Length: 305
Image (cartoon, rainbow, N blue to C red; front, side, top):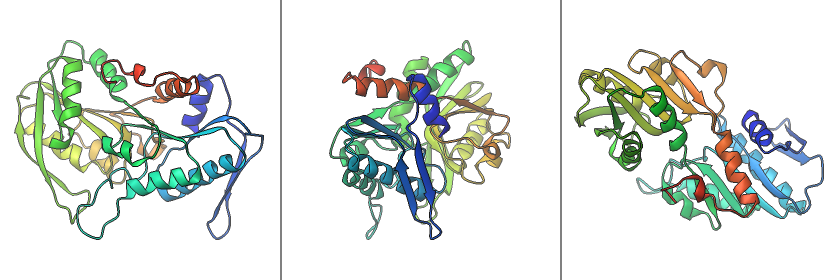
């Protein structure tokens, strides 16, 4: 709600008054308290812990808009639900990210908008336009300003993030390093950091990723960098999932600063001394304004259209 209110304020509008509650058996009920006939509707939802409840609420909100004759419905999911389940790793597994896009489509969504999808191919799961926003410029501009003049090295915590880390390195005019890791498919959230490729000794390392969940990957990578002589380690990630024991791990001393956005709510128990939260609201507001005015969203990201 806080993010949606900030976006609405930036757009000089207000949120549509909505009633939402759960029945005794857990079923969710939603109703808009004013007419939405003929409107260009944007349904913003933060998919935090208890993600299934928030997904269901957003689906019902979309369905209610469709049945109330909204002209066009855009689902705004800054942190896209089930995005990590974008392919089958073994037999008899679902492709949950595809199911999410199908559900939004059936509910009545004409368009999707999200920030830093876990994998870009999720855009192809939805039968309609998908606006894939980048948190990278916001995060990298902060790092460039705060750590100007320092010897920076951008570090990818695994091979899957090399492309994004390379863009970071280009924006910061710094070298790139890569940490090779292995993940046990039978033990979710269990990661070991392995060999390092690149020079980090005496340098400020910027570890970049799309999200931080339990913090296992990032803290193991940060410790590996410190063991190789890094002067300090800065972590930058768009989505602060922060499932336990992430806060304890991130505040244990291996990481000097953690920079995230508010695509997910940062509740008091998830805050700690090294944490910096940047607002993604201006980017979402600009993208909504572009869609509403039938303008290009890509122009918000020069060089990455």
